Length: 242
Image 1 (cartoon, rainbow, N blue to C red):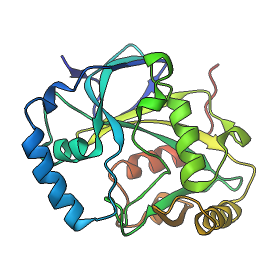
Image 2 (image 1 turned 90 degrees about the vertical axis):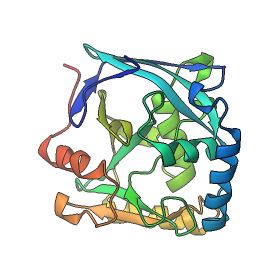
Image 3 (image 1 turned 90 degrees about the horizontal axis):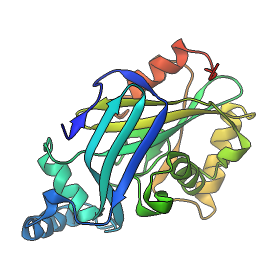
């Protein structure tokens, strides 16, 4: 099977081996005109969209704790075309969430700015995998999380205590890999630093921080993966490898 992994439940990932195939994604072959037409529609709605490079999976399988897969570099215009057509048997999306936990045990998420594709949505600071996240051709999930956290919210994850275990949640919309990072700062201090980062040359895709002190704090515009991740956090203390 191209995609064979647990759906709609959190699972532990002991090993991850997702490779970047230098060839084109099979789903995109012959789709040039359709991609261009879709991109015109998206750009008219959100003129600030940038046709950068991300990756899209052609295979992802989980077996006894090991996650393996294959992905291909695509333009963002191609990604949005796939998104408009999903579910597609030959293509799926994966991304990573560094779950930022404050010293007072709140979760600190972000709200996306109005000019972005996901305008108003709330989720943990993150971005799609890019080819740069595949040193030597193999995905480095933590590299992606450190890069995105620094770019989007100005948080250096190396200053946090990383939970040793990596987890996953696969839904029809995509698969998220996640790890908790425990900060020595309170939620209010983190939110203030994020606001300062945004106002002084940081990522303009972020509207601001959203503090979650319980699952009840999730707003209506929370992304679909957020309720199970937030519930999981507040039901589980820090996990060790032992």
